Image (cartoon, rainbow, N blue to C red; front, side, top):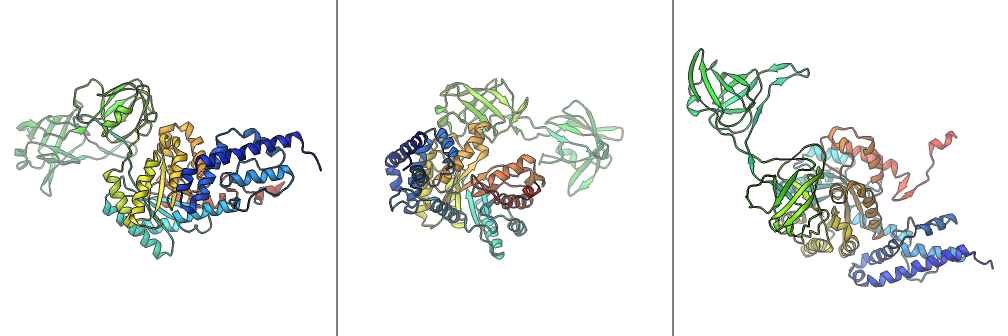
Length: 593
């Protein structure tokens, strides 16, 4: 018998250590594994095994295994124990794995579990490809819109319950399902719960300013005058409120003179009455505020003087750039301040934010640091901005990526959206999952509803979700049709764009380890959806996305073009790549050698 070389003996020793480690981790996670559904029990065990090997640096082992022509563990996610046993068998010269009869989770079984879980959540595999395409619906859809999307290759519809009404969500789901049924196409509809996304309001109001522009051609030449309505009180649009007593007697060719808010003299000429409204024209653009002096002339005779009427105050806007300070306070705190003030609708969270932690505003257009935290609020200073001055409006998102903010409740809007989804859709997207408790909160409601096979997509978009990912996955395996979404937009805000590239890979690996389908989301072919033409970077991103089980597209006027393009890219790439595995199909380019 040939004696094994020291290198082989060392490799066998390392493999033995890993086998011991996965047994220990399985015992440590025994309580969580026992809670998994019977159909997910092997997946829970394999997740424990994957945690064991990923808690170690095994890259040296990988290189040594590759050097002797064996698998380097780089594709072991779905069947960790089986691969380690096979490696031990090859290294010992047996060439067969030393495995007890109860061990069945090999590569084929792992693939079978992943495909079964994908079909349970998303429905049958699309014709000609294994990756599903999910499209985000606008607030209302038509039969023609649904037909075009289905013909382009869409399999799933996402309805964002952060916008619209329950009636609109139900109507959208019904329309898409009816058109899919008419085409004989399987489809599923998911409604995203809004989740506890924080949005800040800029405190205060500012004086309204109305711009009444002059219409010009592409060379800047005026093509028609500015037409405005003269009204007693402003109702919106191109109108000027004038003294009510004037309206009955204004006649064609009368003139109104004023100095606009920019200090420029302007003159308007009355044209006619249309639909009970007096219309006037100006050959110049003008800017209006409330209470500007105005004079009424007929020929050379001054008939009256007065003021323009009140314009409704506009919500305040904060102009912020690097180095600028601002405050974040609880709602209702109206104390005056020399710096912009933002109001946070959930004041109890402010107490959990500490000095030195970051504040990210408006999808990372502004990144600030908390300089002082007190019961009255947070004093912050902008460190980075996407431009010299960013115009921050009310309702924009605010995130505290360094802070421990766990909400732990299902809001009224979420509960309403969940009820509508249970009645009209096939599943829900659980936004801003932070902990296992967030999964349980929605999962238990679904279980209590009695809807068999109702799906749950866990949207991973926070720093807390990445910290608690293993626990979240163990919790997810207690439910039937479940999957993960890499919500890359909010995840980038929380983690930084630099870390996003690393994190999206890790979520793909963990999804495969517990045999749950993953959705690759946010800004896929975004330019194509908006204007019909993709960027080169978007094409590369779309090609990478097919390693997930589903790819999500957002809204856009050219969404059918983007859907068709994505389906074509996926179909072509699947001949070259499956998950992390490169597939060596015949290449036409090789024939030219």
